[in-house]
Length: 277
Image 1 (cartoon, helix red, strand yellow):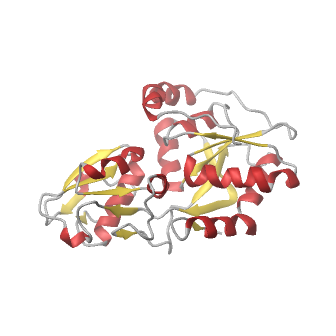
Image 2 (cartoon, rainbow, N blue to C red):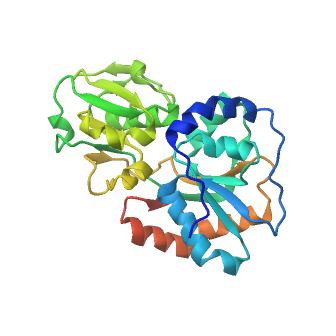
């Protein structure tokens, strides 16, 4: 039913640097023909599922032809937008996009009023039932992209496992830990690999979408999870700068923040994904 492009992480890793370097100078655009399909890159869960719900139930009535392309990493959806291979993407939060643009010289922006949902980051373990049961020297896996690693460390700090240096922001790494009473060891992995790492580590801090794909619920299975209150990590629709007013993008933004999508999120994810509008 979906028109998707499944891309494996292994293949993406080989091409990510090339894509990133070429993204800076690319002037290629995908056009804004109002009658053409809107191509949107997304990670499969929940973004791809939400887009597919819109495609199957809401898009036709709104006069929108939607094409969903799924990717399993956090790099290619942005390079694809920058190079004009897709028109928009839906997979990221603002701290990640800010960091990506800074490091890659890209000019991707959030679409106004199109923040859709939050996926609470959670700590999972196959060996302990509460964080205080982690033994000294335990190994904790973290996402290795800059903003999500900092986010993971802040979650551990908020729950008393570590203390970060004063003033550390969204670029914190294990080197910024000021106090580590349990002498925890940290293993930095690509976010998509974290659920598979659970059998090899004592605990892992896993992004909500990858937890869902592994049948892990932040609401039910996480030892601790982020609070949605005052959380800067809402996921939104994004485009290359200058394409915010594409009428197809505006239509999708309205559908993504519609009452129908809010109900879909509430019914399907049972608190593992939270509507942000």
